[in-house]
Length: 250
Image 1 (spheres, rainbow, N blue to C red):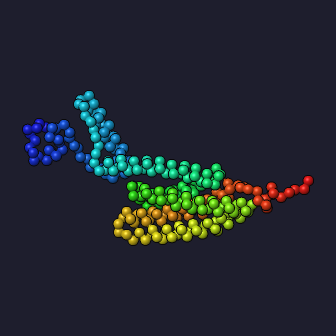
Image 2 (cartoon, helix red, strand yellow):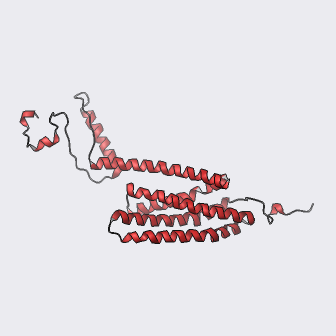
């Protein structure tokens, strides 16, 4: 296309800069998801660069809402994975120092990951996509889970120091701290469930996923953590009723 042949009102003019050095090509895409859109964009760039290789110095730049949003969502996912991984490491280190037990630090990881797994599974089943709004739910789930884990482990440690029997100490800890955890999570589930009546989808999704996260916190701290404590709780101290504390006749 020569400059004199393009009138100012010609529709083609909107796809070319006045100096004819930059051209815009519009492509309609189906909804391929973030990864599919990024992969297709990379294929288009590679194909165009190979076609013009050795012919003309052409720079291919992909833009548009679909591609830019896909790149943004991919960055959110990568940052989310890094942040959650760092949070798990910090929780492990903090609880290890708090309880002065490497074993307790390890045992605290699965119940804190449980709400994340439950929420991700629920999102996959319901077809809810991960975006900047739903990504915030995972930060909330970590906060809820670690709070409940600290309460239960602290109570278990107190009971274990007084009671040499592992199962009895675990039951006592679950009855004590477990009630507070249940009440807190149920109240959170009920409170955030009110958002389900909202006509605004992001608000409704936020309330729905937060309620699911609270349910995952219950599972993690009242099912997973007690099971781990029963298997790997181990002796903390030698209580007066333990076999090691009972003198034996020679």
